[in-house]
Image (cartoon, rainbow, N blue to C red; front, side, top):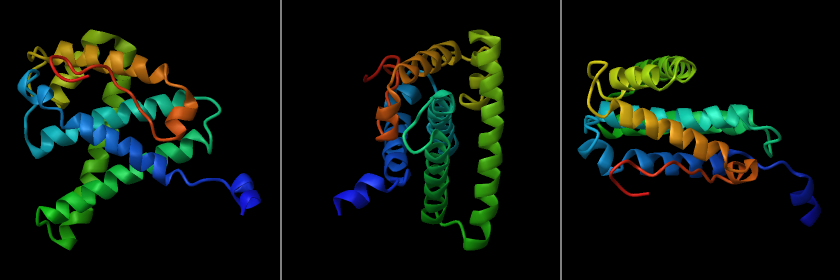
Length: 183
């Protein structure tokens, strides 16, 4: 038994589920909706989940020597996210035939967010703020809260970069304190 555990690779499913649980808890933080004016809608919550999953995936992509491989953990996190989206759509009463189409649309939207946020990070805080205003705040580029949300995303990115690989591999993630809210 001991030798089996010693020489068997662990599945990234449990750590991915833990990471996704952390993402969902953070995405539900009321301060985002109250103080930064993220729309408190299904779409707004989806956008907050996308942002936080993006930050973790970006960190995993840059992490060297991840236990079990960072690609496997990243894929498992992505899978956990979209399994939850599938489950949520079904709970909201979307029929079986519509769920697949909607999940595909959500995945395409997520890939679009990845491109927009990567471009935003490359262009600096103002470009990231514009991308967040469009996607998360569903507003004009100068939406109140966009700059604060961009700073939060950058601070969270730094917090994740400072996290040891082994912590991520175990399913632990940290984000910056929520602006005007809980840590």
